[in-house]
Length: 90
Image 1 (cartoon, helix red, strand yellow):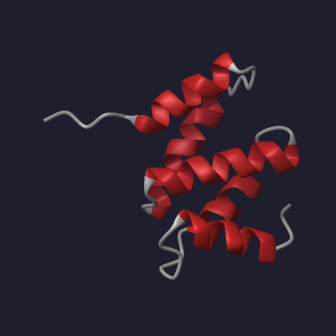
Image 2: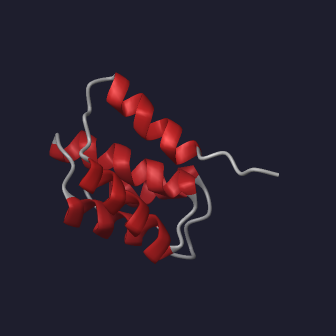
Image 3: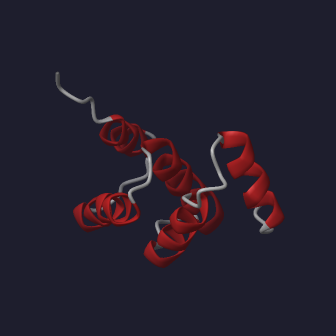
């Protein structure tokens, strides 16, 4: 059974909305996903918040955010959103 790459579809959707990530940035996203062993929903949330707060893709911000989201205590999107608010992200 083939695994569907939801992250790839999400990046393509961003491209269609005008967020043109470079090949290097896309490779870095997958590097971050693999190095943190984060589930795709956390990677997508980290991308979304990085673009929302920074207005562009900032690699160090993305990786820091992904590492924070990937803590064992965060199991749901609601818990992740709460953590982001406590860190001062709108």
